[in-house]
Image (cartoon, rainbow, N blue to C red; front, side, top):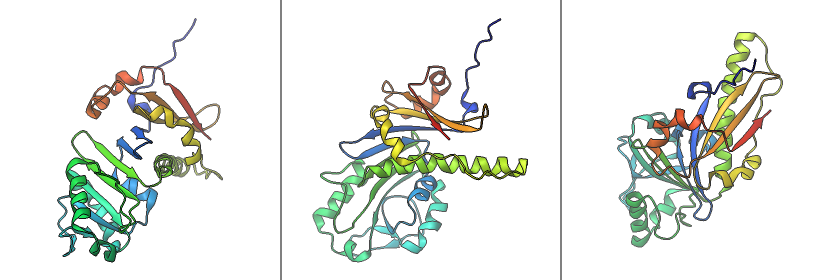
Length: 250
């Protein structure tokens, strides 16, 4: 008697993340990513210049008329970020650089806040910014411009590894057994899978119990999806399709 292999449902996975990476323009669109996860991968960042927000406890820069988060307030800001429905910020090194921005450069920042894309480059020499970050609760979308595209790999790896570490800590607590080494994925290994996310893909993390404990990420190309909310509406149907690639994390 042949027993059919049980298909996994959405709840059988630890985590799902949508990623669409544009290597030419050096940005990525994510869904399922929280600001807390992003900041954990790159902390500590310096100051954050707020281009679109509803945060009430920010500081004010007289030269640009923009509000910003000082370095020593970033942690507090991130903790309250879940309350924000829409957010756009750019990191900057120090306020001296902010005070040197020309009217044209300030206009370019306003354009980014409105269009979620730059007129020319999203990176400003006077600010020495590493990122441009935009997120919206509508469509559960996050768009990030990366000065160094390798930071996109670092971000994904950090999110996955943090989830694995949390799962292993919980398991070790109940079993009273601490592993000498926790499975982890390297940012370098993720670079091999960039072609899969160039048109948009779903990354689904799960735990394998046998023959030995390990983790895996199923990758499914979602080039046919134009709207992120449709991905989550169709999640169960998407997971019934065979994955395009499987990454083991041991």
